[in-house]
Image 1 (cartoon, rainbow, N blue to C red):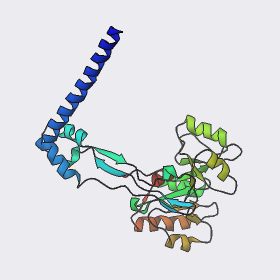
Image 2: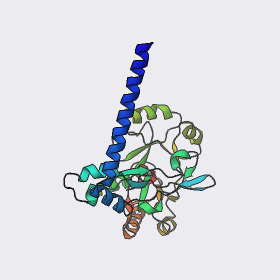
Image 3: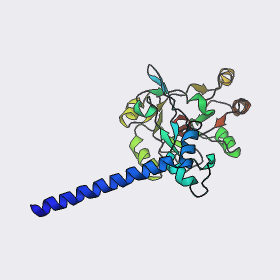
Length: 259
């Protein structure tokens, strides 16, 4: 029993010693002129998080904040001992209201602050070949018959009866973005599998080009129906370019990372 107390006492001394040493090191570090400068400048570089917006059953994803990691930034600049914004290290700060905590809500658009839009193809054909030729990104509603591992487009699981089979393939190839484009048949299985639920705010068909074109905004999600015309897609692309918006994969548009 005596040895036990001796061992226990030794452990306590070691823990206290480590704690005391760490506290002293922190005090010394905080008094360093370079650290003081980093602290002073950090307020100019920190970015507040943006809460997701919830309206009934719908949600607009938020944005993570960015906060200067003082200690890591200091060690990045220690060698030169000069403050430089290029050596700042940031930690992400999750918004208080986040998409990841509200996956039962439906996404119609991405956050407008990202200056991005996304295109979703119902299937491949003339339009998809055109997008490939122009190196334009898009997401593709995929099923067991058209799925190609690591293809040009971002694959979105659009199966119902074969949902698990395609899910396994997407996981195996590290392509699963865990997104569902909602239709009349898949909401239950998407909820059950904890997917992000997306119902595109704009849906281009053969007869609504003017309406879609006039409503393209930062954050727009545009579903390109099979009936859409290539000439209409060209107009849509011109409008996106005119509004200085970047076309990205759907997974990049809806995620809350702050670029």
